[in-house]
Image 1: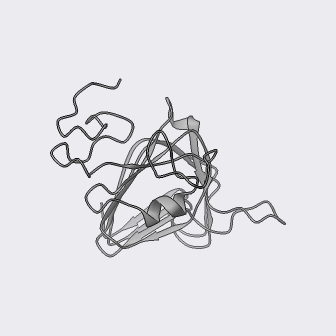
Image 2: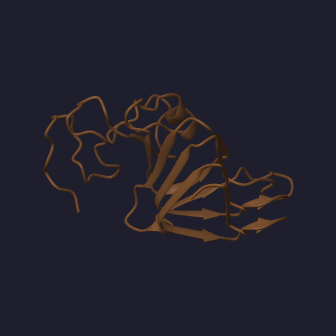
Image 3: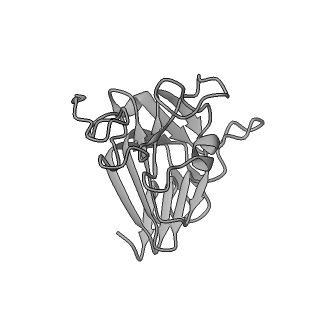
Length: 173
C-alpha cells in the first residue's frame, strides 16, 4: 500500500518503499539500491544505486535508510555510526536476500552479515538473511552493546561457532 501523502513534496510518502524519514524536510529520504541498476544511478527509485557500498557512501544524515530492490545482495557491515535501516523493496521478505560475501573457491561464506556495536541500532524490514557462517556468536547478526530491530525478516542457513546461530545480542535489545 502506498498512500499519496507527501507534505514536503520530495516525491516520497510516509509509507512508500522506505518511507519518508521526515515529511517536513524535503531532503530526508531513503536511498535505493537495485543490483540490476546502472552504476551512474543517484539513489532514487527511478535511478537507484547499483551497490550497497555506494548507498552507504551517500546516506542521508537524517534518513539513514537503504531500500534494497528485489535481488540478492552480498555484504558484510560493521556498524558503529548510530541508527541504520535496511528495507526490502519487494512484496515479500523472500524477494530480497542479503548474504555475506561468498568465497568463490569454496562456495561458502566465512563471516556474518552485520556486526553492530557502540550503542548503534540496526533495523531490518521485509527481507531474508542467509548463509552466515561466523566462528563466534551470531551467524548472521552480532550486536555488542547495540540494538537490533527485525520486522518481517527471514533468517535461514546460518552457522555460529558460539551462541545465536542467526542472531546474538549482548548488552543490547
